[in-house]
Image: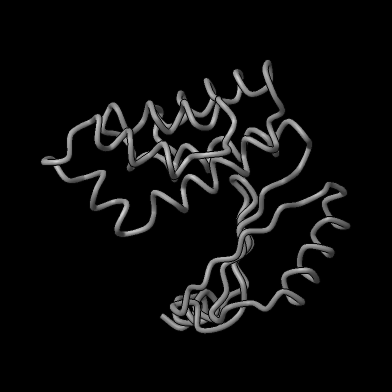
Length: 174
């Protein structure tokens, strides 16, 4: 769950993008910015107190080249206020707003082994048919599950993992 601060930044960017450009391209640009700021070398420069704000801003300009004003300005603002660590949360919140506005359900699927693209597409297709909505699948690799899947759709969870079944068996035997 995103922090209230990340949510406010995402909402502000969403409103500006909706009024001035289009929300979908800004989402892609914010995801690109998240990946750029996630690089260890970039993080080291942005977090270094010896690097001045002007030097950070100059470095950032080259990295953000070609992005629209809403995405570029949001990242600049976060960096200027020392909040660049919020970028992943802001991006996730922004993407959730875009999906909600377009009727797409965000679903997180956790599995014991990484899913290949074919398995992801099958799961996505089954869920889209069962829920009668387009879905956006996010997969998470969680070896602690041992096997099976855990599907999260908002506040709803379907846990069909081996770990869950073993816990239920243990509780029944106690």
